[in-house]
Image 1 (tube, rainbow, N blue to C red):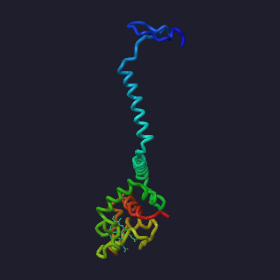
Image 2 (image 1 turned 180 degrees about the vertical axis):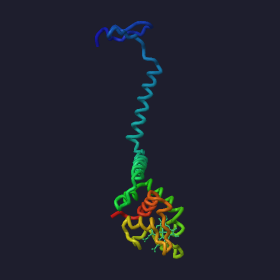
Image 3 (image 1 turned 90 degrees about the horizontal axis):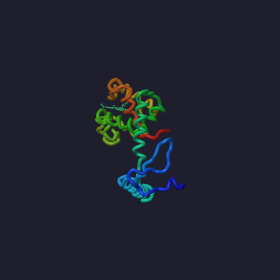
Image 4 (image 1 turned 120 degrees about the vertical axis):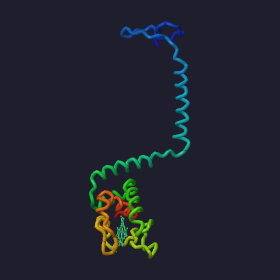
Length: 184
Ligand code: HEC
């Protein structure tokens, strides 16, 4: 530190002994509010570091991030709904699609297939078959399930939902059913 940079006792109006590009600097103490903000930030950072890095309290951002990713993927998938096996499996792993499908299911399908999806397996009085067992009357591929929901099996009492729901909602409800099954 050169002589000219030595801090002086602060005096109102005195300047430091350096000049840069014609600019002089007043020699003033840092104001107390500024210093206390700095000390406060240091104390806070120690507490913060201890809480987040040392205390072992789990601080979870994972579920929030996953929900956000699912939301973005759902928007992408909705803007271009492709109906084939890989896409239907993909939808069946998306929380937003599953939630949309579950809503439709509980309001339109649960009457016959029961809220648990287990239909006749749960109660012989149910009209619709079990949608959670691995047995499919009309084929086990997602596209088969989609076609049954879309076109129905009118002679057996399964209505056609495609005209009522449209492609996206039909895909969502199929995704909800598939979410109870393992992708191959
Ligand atoms: C009025 C009663 C009824 C309602 C409501 C109903 N279903 Fe069905 N569903 C049936 C019946 C009966 C069958 C069996 C058809 C058969 O035997 O071929 C069936 C079959 C199915 C199948 C094929 C199962 C298999 O093993 O291949 C799927 C998938 C299905 N329903 C989904 C749905 C969805 C999704 C909804 C709501 C959007 C719905 N169902 C609403 C009566 C219903």
